[in-house]
Length: 467
Ligand SMILES: Nc1ncnc2c1ncn2[C@@H]1O[C@H](COP(=O)(O)O)[C@@H](OP(=O)(O)O)[C@H]1O
Ligand SMILES: [Mg+2]
Image (cartoon, rainbow, N blue to C red; front, side, top):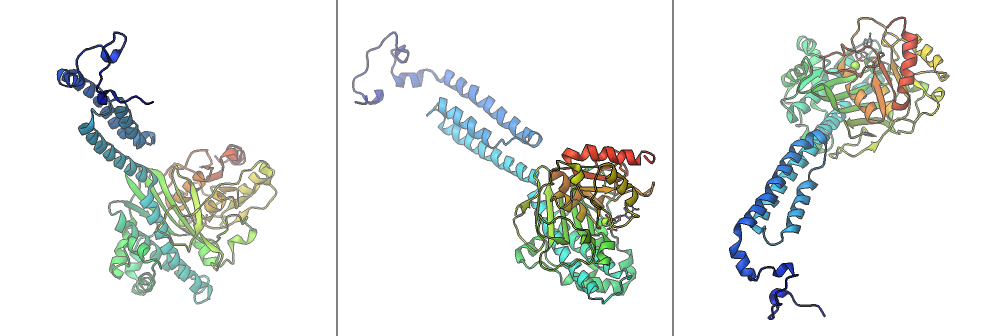
């Protein structure tokens, strides 16, 4: 039969020398009134270390990445477990503290995931891609001369204005490095009104998403001013966005691959990247084919959005899927290559951007027989990141050319987050902290992590005379 609690029993147990609970003959009420100091001491003894732990954990969370939200909870449990009933007023204080710290920690974790930045980047790229696609279709219909550069100019200005508008609306204090500046638009009234006609009618068909980007730009003058906000010198400090509104202008003109590119760098390190590739297949499993660089359409089955956040992997999703969930998307990863001879290379279409001859010599050295796949733009980075291709080489042609940060920032992160390594031909990581160009780097070697060193070795052997 269960014994009744001592306090409820009318018969007190006789005191016993061996019973620690009866070492004193005083009653519990006596005990309550006679020893406040030890209890206070005990309280302080437990509380002060707990608060110090909470403070330290919270401060260290951004550095260590440790999930401290659980820590205050366990400290609370520990205190309650050892001193039930004595901490009621203090426990509400502790609970409040815990809530405060968890809120702070959750905010830190969100910040580390750059959720809002990712969402805005994805939507901004998607909206800008709608504009570029409209121009691409006009061009495909033959309404403009093939050698006329105006479609790409119109698309470039329009897409840049739309992306900057979204960034300014959401992150007004961030700096922006963008490819275009508005001088030409200010001089050319006709060009300005053509771009404005396109910009004013381009919106996402999801009203919440469109509202998040700040809705339409006010007028043509505001549009021109927005374009010039992309004039930051870049550098190693603070938050800087890099925009290439149409990367692969040559591809855009020839009806091949091009990309709308956006990346966020914080203190010179790329944290978020989004690449809209309107003419790539949606299907991640489709291997690259020789014809991928020409006569493309953005019909059904085409148009993919690659994204990545540093430390959180890379994903792809259809460019047409507008969602307020930044995590919607399929994780992508580079193809595991056991036998390098089975790998395939991609490179620029333009021999003036990357040496085709050196690339062929490197292929040969590695025993790769498949011809390289040539395509314009950062679509190359996206394609190897999802395993459609394996290796991307950009081999310097000119000794003086400096690569632009907007041509690489998003792609570099997406490949690294998909399990790849990206360096220059000297084996140095791309350095986005030195301004608008990659002044500290030469060329690009991007490959799955496991084979990167081997590929780099072959690159250096072939280029040894030039390096
Ligand atoms: N001599 C050169 N070497 C390497 N890249 C160059 C170059 N001249 C121009 N580019 C860059 O190459 C980019 C295109 O890369 P790709 O050849 O991979 O498609 C161009 O971007 P835009 O098309 O945005 O102008 C341009 O910035
Ligand atoms: Mg470019």
